[in-house]
Image (cartoon, rainbow, N blue to C red; front, side, top):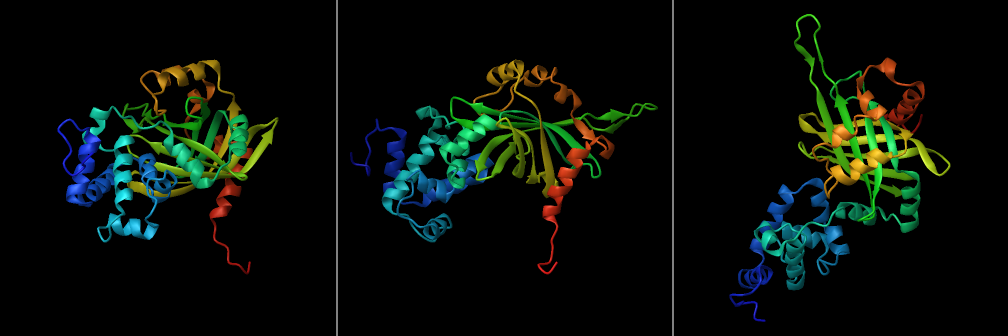
Length: 325
């Protein structure tokens, strides 16, 4: 086929290839910038140089050359440019042709990008699948209310359709009003982050995102307690970006509350969309869960002693110590 002059019945992707041949790479470069700027954190990972290389989209260009291409200071080899265009279309990033091709993003591709990035092998993933699923208490110092603590809920579950280990984390500030005049003293706010958990050597890594604010957090658990091939508790550090407060770093402890109940599994199967985001009615399905009922931002007296010690242990990792001491 002559890509310089594609016939009228050519597919959209062929027309774009023809445009690439006629006009050069400037329009592709500009579109790539726009897509990357507007992408969610999980989508941006799919556009990272290393992921593009592993997907054999970029085969010739070095990371230095690719960075120069993004800034308009270099050109890609023709085959690399064509494969990049095809990738953007086939993965559903190119809005102009998404409807015509009926392309949907592959669910949980971020998980597999993370697996490749951390080089988490199959046997390690199987051990995580056996040990991690369940419902956990989440304990960490509050970012929005210094001096108090978040008691949240984390659900870890396996998505059989994609092979991904997913997480769903829920925090809630119940809110309160004055008994004397009825004015709101603290607002009622619920935050939901969905993400993925991957095991690398002896550590667990969770990447999670909030849909509305696009808050992003990475949690690394370096200390695990296990029995009967199940994780009973884990502690580590959570680093993230949240609204106008910017970067935060907090110690975090998870304590297993129990297995995923049949009712919760039904809610996961029927009340989460393909990407793992809650749909209307999901929180109502959780109403009977004791941990969901207990969630709030609590004072220090409500933090169990075991949790308090584990938080202090993780917090110590953030303190700078001079090599001489």
